[in-house]
Image (tube, rainbow, N blue to C red; front, side, top):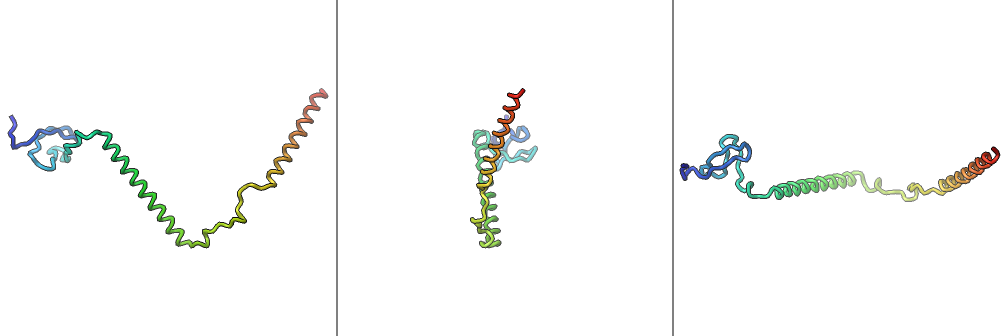
Length: 123
């Protein structure tokens, strides 16, 4: 029978070795020297995964904030004059010439289809 001053018999979560905790805090496995968290057996695994996910989101937000700060610093170094956009020379791709060229192409296609119909009728 175990002596009461040896404490509770524990099982290491890392290596699976069984040992007495000797009433120490923190509980350390004598074989692999891993620190045993007694609440890890009681906590649901989802909570641990959710905590890891929230930490990952926090890291991503911090990274995005640092990148935004870096971009604003670069913009301040460049100056406001180079960041202005000339609206008059901005090409939006809505040229009327392109629309006219498309209409001309349709007329040519109609002429070709009429010519093909005439060829078929002559045969």
